[in-house]
Image (cartoon, rainbow, N blue to C red; front, side):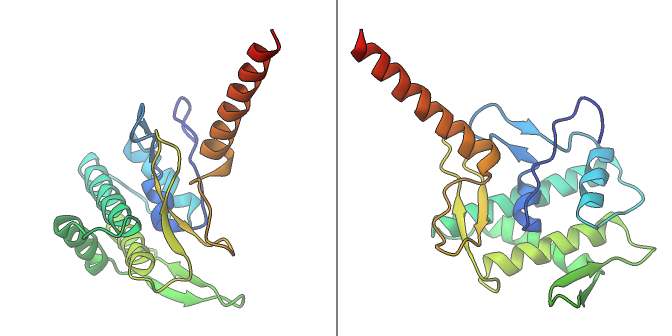
Length: 191
């Protein structure tokens, strides 16, 4: 990981984890892929390693990220999907040339060829977004309960009632704030 860049917020769902490379959208935004190298680092973490990324390709990746976020947010809110964002996702999915493989654990694994480019990796992310937004995968789209985050996430918990995009960040921060407010309230009433 690059020094001075915020840590990645990693999740088990590729498309929504990709949208998490920009967090705190309704507070002070935190860009986790500020440079082409950081995008390459993120892709490598998810098994989509490619050799190069230009600044123009980084802009395309961010456009895909924001399109996925817009469509996932609309789907989670049961609103109409923004047509322009849907077009961006479909375009990236159509351009990618990755192969879906079945693992011995009955999981899908994407394989990029040795000649794969960033376009192929973005195609995999777009295809994953299509799978979760269209309802092909078991789970539900939801929005983080944190008022500063509001990230779209894919809830695969048994009860489908998860409230936070990440319990270690947003959930913990909200629980800590609630604890401190209750502590202040009890301290004030004891005085």
